[in-house]
Amino acid sequence: MIIKELHASNFKSFERLGLTDLSRFSVLIGANSSGKSNFLQVFRFLKDISRDGLRNAVSMQGGIDYLRNAKLPPHDISIRVVYDPELEITMHRKSGPLRIRYRKFAYEFTLELTGKGQGYRIKSDRLEKEMEFPGIAGKGKAPLKGKSLLENSGGKINYTLNVPRGVKIAADEVVSPFLKEESLPENSLLLESSYFSFFHRFEKFFDKIAIYDFDPKLPKRIAAVRAKVELDENGGNLAVVLRDILQDPERKRKFSNLLKDLLPFFEDLEIEDLTGKSLILKLREFYSGNRFIPSPFISDGTINLINSIIALYFEDKSLIIIEEPERYIHPALIPKLVDMMKDAARKKQIILSTHNVEIVKSAGPDDIYLVSRGEGGFSYITRPYEKEEVRTFLANNINIEDLYTKDLLGI
Image 1: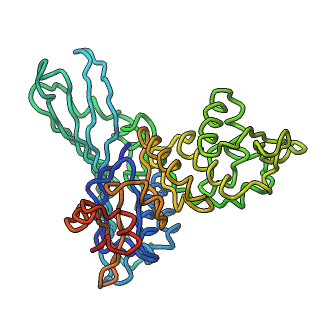
Image 2 (image 1 turned 120 degrees about the vertical axis):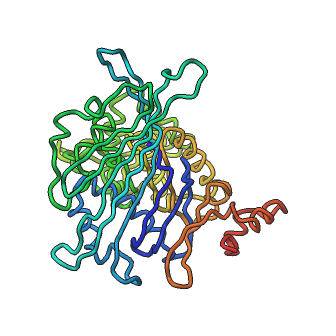
Image 3 (image 1 turned 90 degrees about the vertical axis):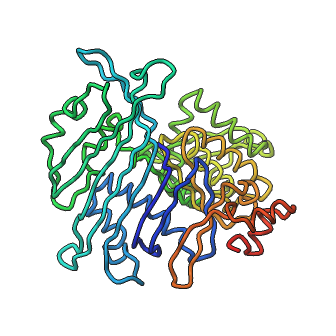
């Protein structure tokens, strides 16, 4: 799943948010309190709805009053996300197989503020899908296209299908009978229903968003044996995750090679089991001979690099967001880390938030998104590279990092 567009209104510091060109690798920059964290909260809100439901997701944002923009009079909160599901299926029917290639999904919902009860109600909730039918039009011709619409109306789910002539398929063949009988509880969205998992090969793709904010102090502590092997968003369960990786020779080889690309002095890792109840990470360096260094004495930068490698290459996530990945890392390593992120972005979408000049320099002008605050106090996002003045500076050998440090990217 690759998110192409993101739109929102009345969401935290944004009056209106409209991004129509998100790429596989994006770097988010901006001054303190410009709205970078609020932008990332859109993704967390979508993930929380998918995983825990709308009521819990609103509560985890602090309630509806903390979700909306405090500078605006109370009015609707809306979010629209357009993404490529990278999904193709083949339906096997009596009349023969039918290939369906899904090109674009657009999901949007609107919450109306009521000031009563929970303080909101669902005003609209819909998922629109654009699809192609390869092979039907004939060899060498463009595939026929169709659309379908899934709408939640007061808990009742309606499905409509619009396909061109020549495509013999009915809505009943697309939607399983047990799904058509489903009704949603009050104030529940399609995003949290089984419809989303059905149309994504029985997975909820928004569950596969991870927003990492690593704290290198946490993995230095002794870790409990009983913990999940999916990397926590703060990186605190690193020892447990590494134990799982190191048990597989091929995964261990891949991880070791990646870490050695960043840290040539790295030699080996091991996870020591203490009394069967806890684990501790140990690392051996070229400088330490045969002695393994226990996690409390491993540098914060090394811990953060290990967490980043795992997030990028070993976690089954479609969208990886890393906040300030440069923390505790020497500037000379930043270009290598960014190259690694660009490599990982071939298979998943990567978004970074940063203040670091080396990341801006290494990312390149067309990967940069600038978050700013306008005179009214509302956040907005621009791509500096699209501005003629910025391109003129770049054409005259003034680097993107120089414009950034002199606060000229907003022009």
